Length: 136
Length: 488
Image (cartoon, helix red, strand yellow):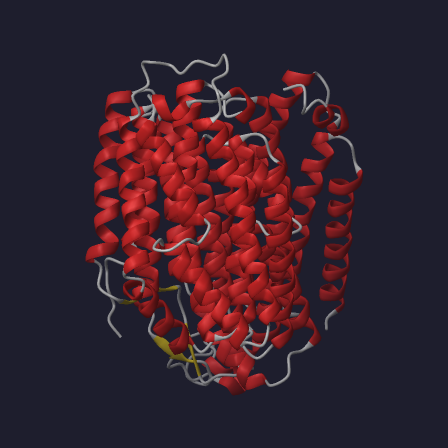
């Protein structure tokens, strides 16, 4: 495993654990929301680490590869075998992109709910907000 | 393989309807028209669609070059695949039918709002995609979309309690969603695949599971527990049900049970050789059954009571699946179908009670049978149905669950099924007595509320319960055949 990948996975682990800690231990609504977001970021980093290949080609740049190319005749094209061995794995990057969009929408709903609860209780303390559950 | 072009319409059409309804927000007449037309079309699509698979972008199965790609199987699906068979047809027909009922009730209660209708259709599209898809990441995406739609449906109640429930649900969902995606990422890292069929083949070809794959199973199982509303996340789900409008709660509990079924089948297909998974499923299912029924017995509010009954029944579905034989899994899925029908009737009755009396607190209600005899009679019949009394549908599925538990060598679980039925009967019949037979209290029913739509819908549903009870094989046989063919 490449040092970049090791670093990515370690950082992702730290992000996920920090996110979980914020959700479980912190009393502030917004900190919980940030914690939830950190978990998503950590998972994204794991996906990026999986797709990374040291010195790999960017697969989206299609001129690297032609299905019928022979390297000797088309010097700027790679044969499929060479391309497959050199290119980074593109799928995880597409997944990360989708997950960022999903994360943004869930984050916006959570923030909107935090605003509503803050206006109602005039506090961001989860303990105070959820203690008054019986009064509602 | 038949590449049916109508299959993706089951997801795409509700999404288009949602966009239109959202665009026309505050133009009530237009939203109503869109909602009615879309509902009729949505219910027709699963019925006329032919069985088959849909390959997105037309990507057929492609050579995987194992020596270069390190993939363990010689050919793979390059795009997202949707599969539509008899099981999907039954689930989607029921899902669209219930969604249509909820849309009609919302229109009838003047709850019509572009965003609200949009969220109902988005939730329909999401669950349809979850049932149809053979791609793990697509599965995850629609689970996340569904979470937002469900939270929005609860927020629409505009009560602080509902906002709190939705906030809790969103926070837990972010953990569960992260857990599922991390599991998917690990599987992608180990096997390089996202298609469930391919993953299943690759795992079989790869022999013993690697520790990373085992971690992936654990992470996805945590997500499965949350999305299905099983122990220890039952409180979050039941909190959502009780704070939503009762008719929306009927839809939410249906969606949760269908996700439970879809996700269980996916897990069992992919990790069919991993016996511990079934034991873990069974263990959590037993806890859910016990806790759901005990909590239901303690409630004094109809909505809370029904929420815990729904949780307990979800445990029963998971128990059938966790037993792990073809017979028990089929019985579990059959019970999910039966249970959502009976639970929907009870939630719709709760909706009528709430609209009529403005409360669902049992101690404030009484003498309802004189005011709404039809509603009372059908609630009594639904109580019998959900408790597994013949000739209703749940009897057929619970009987099969008991048989399958005995056949699988877990005779003691059959006692648990019977105990759950008894506890459910006691909890719901107590509510029936308090609402319809107890001497009257000061709470007066609103004379303007006729409840014609509620009455029509619950009559249709109880007729369906009776029909399935009398002719169970029409539903059960296709399920059993599919489960046997999947080899889970």
